[in-house]
Image (cartoon, rainbow, N blue to C red):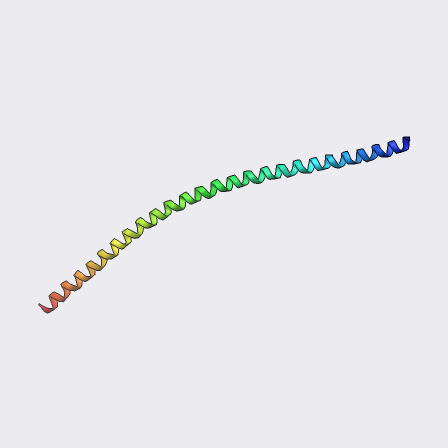
Length: 92
């Protein structure tokens, strides 16, 4: 009887050891999940900041495009005026 009790206690101890190992594994997994969640939040904030910067750059590019378009028109107006003045001098 004592031997079966010892065997039974040994099995209980083994199961408790397995349970303790499982708890440690779960705790590690939970720590990993928390770390991944923090990394995700940091990346989300970084992407939001980059998106804001990209919107600012897009506005600046649009303003520059309008400026370049205006300068381009003025350049061609000056070229056509100069050509017209030269042509007027030649034929008159």
